[in-house]
Image (cartoon, rainbow, N blue to C red):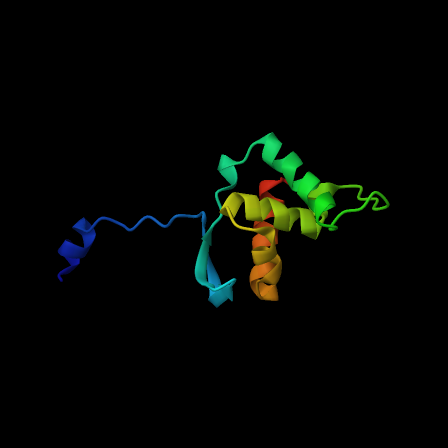
Length: 112
């Protein structure tokens, strides 16, 4: 392909919402290679539901004192799970490198 042909070729647009996992990951019999983290689809109800679900599953108790929920890794994981449309257990089960990067994206979304 000549240089001129390459210039006319449309650029491939990368979807910033797609998070490519560091390696294929199996969870409950399904293989994941990427997650679509669509934070923009979330509502305030989703964020409140994340807190309610944390309490229901033991990730947050009445004795916990969390001055800034947006800095709390479990909260970030629950929010990321909502954005990806997956069970929070999948986020927690990811390799640490992927877990850390995904929860950081949630933290950035939460404007911390």
